[in-house]
Length: 248
Image (cartoon, rainbow, N blue to C red; front, side):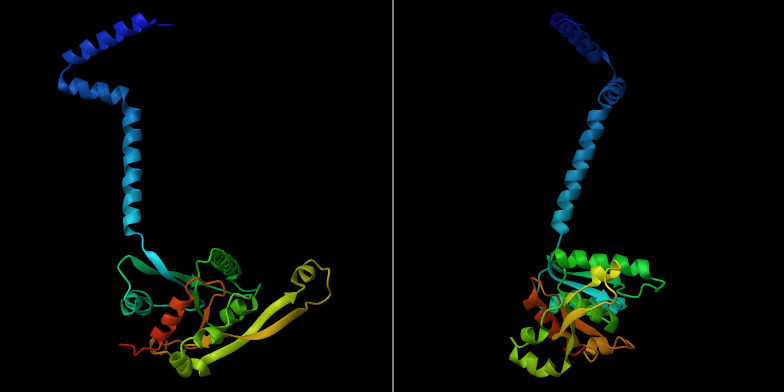
């Protein structure tokens, strides 16, 4: 063990030796003895800079939108995101978060069954975390969103805007919502047949005739639903009105 005096003497000799080194020798010495602290400092600085840049560029989501079983091209996507933000008078710090390429199906024999399962988990996670407001989907996805109880009563919501309701009331659609069922018991073989208690709720809007959707060339009907626990329902209502604006 080096005594305090010995340690002091050793530091003195190192200091004196360092003074006599050439610039190149000093660089090598520092690199050899302080490599780990220097690398650590660089990594810490890089992380801090990256975090600062990310925070500066991060946009506040004004709306979370999902496209389920509906393929959306770049032109339509831009119209439903950036152009909507401009229409709604949003700032450059605000944005529309989009979930794309979701495939929702309840068919276990489908070739895309695993992909459908992953998509459903993604939707469940988004709904649970309240990071999904609007779903644009085909009939199959609409049926599943509805039966799962994800969609709010869109009739009640649109009635808040009398002029919009007058324009769109005929496009509101009803669908089945499962209130209670024995799915678990049936899957476990504890019940001979599947039974469910259901109700019909006006929870969808047929947007197939909206100018931007109609011009996109979808072969089948396209529906819009608003998530029950959405925290941006007023924004969703504004978005619906925008969909039926003249499309350039």
